Image (cartoon, rainbow, N blue to C red; front, side, top):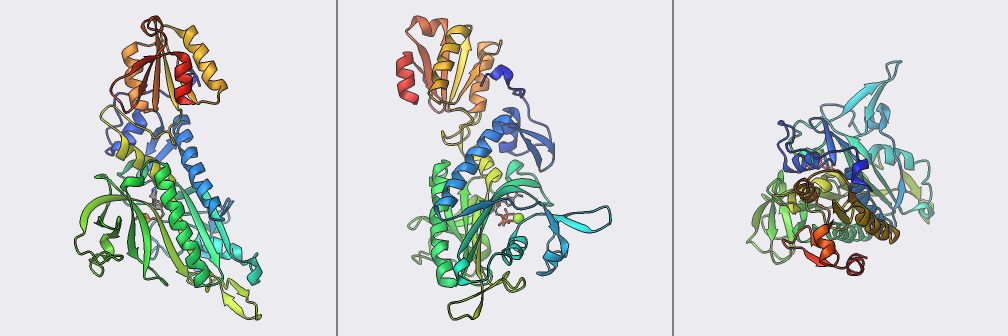
Length: 410
Ligand code: ATP
Ligand code: MG
């Protein structure tokens, strides 16, 4: 893509009311636009990152047997009344609206109820199960405090998977697969070594649920890590569980962390009120055994910025970067365009800075944007035999030939 065609511009300053590092950098670099506290438009560069995260998540969910659907944002009151979760005293973060005839509606903040309700149309026999249905979409929450940028949106992008199993045993098998899929996702987005599976209070059926927590000073949570097992316990259960749940280690280390996902066993908590039942092999009615698996896609994008950026700007891992190569032309547009075409033909994603601006500005913008490989074409580089090649996270660049460049990045 030609950078001159990108309508977004970098800015020296973020809005004064923006206190979080992730939103400050993402706004300055032109990945998001702040509409109001907790509400951000995703701009072209940002959307490329969101889509990459979503695709990694999609790939891993499909690998577990997941099937994707698209749920609705508009929610019917009666469905939520079945579990008493329409009541604002029970759920304090609903956004509600109404039809012209005054019928009340909600804007989805999660989907356990509508999914359970919908599945009554499709589940009747043991032959219909298990089902692993997931959804990647925007959800809405009237969060009391929205000071963490895109890590706590009032409108945010997530993946939610709901599992519908015949019994607890079948459920547990899937739950273990989900743990592996989640670990794969955090590894692929470059947060593997900082993300801990964390024991949390369990809810209805299992003793524990699990959160995935990424270490960061910007985190709103506290976790207690067992360095031997590389797992953690969250703040809410540390009173009752103050040793490592796996090895009994008493020496847990406290750290601040960001909850980037969580998985829950729901048992029959939702299948009972919705009468989500199936006939087993003996022809007897059984309630479906459920689980839920959430992952904040926009929060994950914010987390990567919090954890991997430096004082010059964002540092994207290659898997999430909006482009793989940032090609900077310093007065050598024709030569640079040839390289742009060569790389593009090979399917390499290149952002070509063809703007008529100072070299210093191009370099500063390139650091701010955080694209993994910077390639500079200048009179000097051409004289020295090619282009200057530098990784975003290394200090020094080097001159390499165009053939060598193609070899290094394809
Ligand atoms: P938190 O304790 O941070 O409010 P939660 O327990 O409410 O999270 P869930 O309802 O289980 O979270 O949502 C699943 C995932 O969605 C979370 O693990 C997190 O990654 C993400 N998430 C939750 N709330 C937000 C938000 N306001 N903005 C962005 N992502 C969010
Ligand atoms: Mg919450």
